[in-house]
Every structure is written in structure tokens, then in C-alpha cells.
Image (cartoon, rainbow, N blue to C red; front, side, top):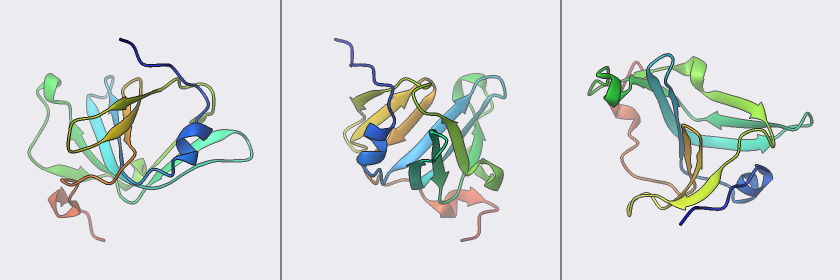
Length: 125
């Protein structure tokens, strides 16, 4: 059974996500994650996802994943044109609830446990 593909991120914005964002970059071999501060669509029809803080790590399947996450303040904002990044709504694991999957990016709609800023080296809140 395949999930229905969506393109208008206004559907996500309207859900007022309170969870976190995770983005993988296969070229760099990294993953960024952090809790969502806001998600908006600006006057130029760009989706802007702002994180409260961002942490970076290597990818597990690339053998570069470490137990510690590193603070990465330059990665707090993700921006892309609306209608250009297709996504699906799907159920995450039992403790994380519904999520939005868009390529190698995942946005959890509900607050989740386990995202602890104390586990991020160099992060000061």
C-alpha cells in the first residue's frame, strides 16, 4: 500500500508541527536534526523550517555515526520552494507518531522524547 503523494507544504504548515526535523545529506555523509521552532511559507512561496537548535552527526550506514552529536548552528534553517519537494504523511514508530517524509527528510508532527540538547556537544541554550 503506497501513501498518497502531496506537494503543497501549506498542508504541513497548517498542522502546526511541534516535533523535530531530520535531514540526511548522502553527498556529505551527514545527518542534521533538531526540534522545530517554526515552519512557514514566505511571500516568495518558499518553505522555511527553522529549528530551535541543530545537531550534526555522520550517517550510520556510512560508518561515520558517533554516539555524540555536534552543535551545528549554521544548519538551523532549511529553505526550499513550495510545491518542489513532494512528501507523504505516514505513521512513524509507535513513540514518535505521524510524520512527513520528503526524500531523505523527515518531519515529526508531534513532540517526541529522546531529542535531548544535553547530548549535543557545544550546544548552549
